[in-house]
Length: 204
Image (cartoon, rainbow, N blue to C red; front, side, top):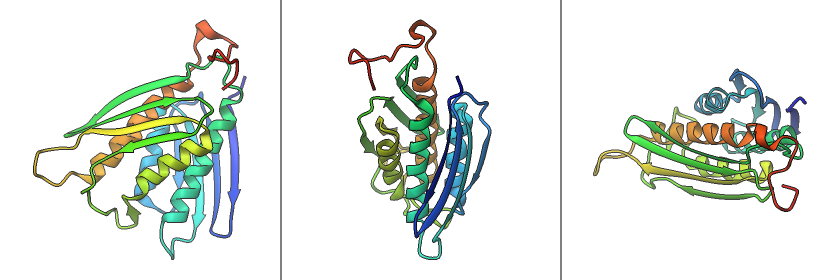
């Protein structure tokens, strides 16, 4: 059974197209107009083992907020559609990913209940790459978890040397890689659970 999705999201502020194949090979084709965000979404594709195509046109003349948020909402919707009734999936995923001095943790439950917990240092640089506000990282995970209908915990366990300003690029990138690995694990089909929804309720 094909586990794919194609989502189109159009508002007065953005136009987003997302194509997702959960059983892909890690190919990412990403264009949002926010260079660092493109780099991060490519981490989802590569380290999740998903084929992911994202094209967003947004009101970047104002700022990046609508573009980043609406893309995250469409990405979450694509995961929800591709997972279908979630029969046979592993359901839970847990990953810790180091990026030099940074250590990030991500835990996901394909629960059907949107919930997000996020913990990162408060004193990181406000922007990366000119037009990516680091304050949006939390909002990305909120939007994704809500739209995908998953429970998601993302935490920075180690942020660098004591007394030094944390590296914002490493902190955000480690989160995306950890989420990608956790999603890869949770979305994987469990051969011991073929065709069965992994819940005592019988539905997720």
